[in-house]
Length: 298
Image (cartoon, rainbow, N blue to C red; front, side, top):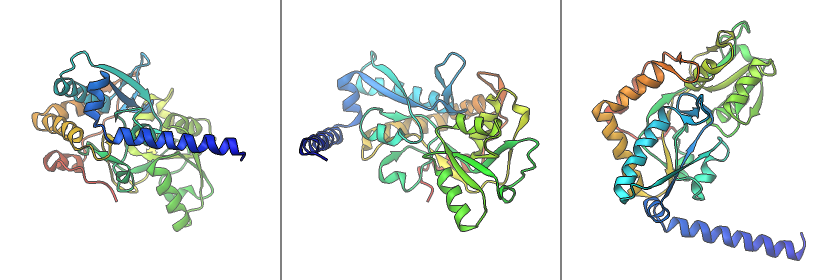
């Protein structure tokens, strides 16, 4: 590296450090009130939490909850004219874009775990899921033990990818693990026969199956490898904003609005194809409507 490049690199690091320091000194609500803008992150294929609907706009269970949070933010900062911007994120860039201030909140399918909690904060858990596999109906694959010698795809940057890599090594399961950029690409690799199974949270597998051109050629198999909570993600150490988000969720959970929204997205026909996921509420989620916990997975 030349002396000039070293100087430019050092200057860039100093600038990034200054920007991050300035952001940490400003709460999310102060930032939003001052700018008149709140930026919501969405996922393009995390069905039914946050995904692009028939008109190319974000829709979903998490997306609607975030809309309720926006309404509360408008009242709190006294900005009825608040402009909402949207930003597509992936499993790989969602945390960096949150911590650097590009987005203010992520409305998707992010697992609340202890490792991520070192970088960000999570609201009250609003879903629980476990890793299973999406395969072709005629594949003969019924469980993880059938994957020896097979190609398994999982979305890069997810806890599922890490879990599958660890299990494969520790239990000598003998499958080849490959990464894809998002859930849609992972599903496509199975459909095209370039992967034998897609390992991911079961509810997302049901969602991607429902959106496939021919859902009947795909099936979700295997027992859940582990149970993990999903939660809305925010910047770390901003207690005022976290309280607002939590209070919005608590209000929805106590009023019955949350359960109605759940039925809309998990037990009713959803866009773009009007397919019903038929996914009843889990015991873990029912329990959390009472305990209102933001406890992470280990």
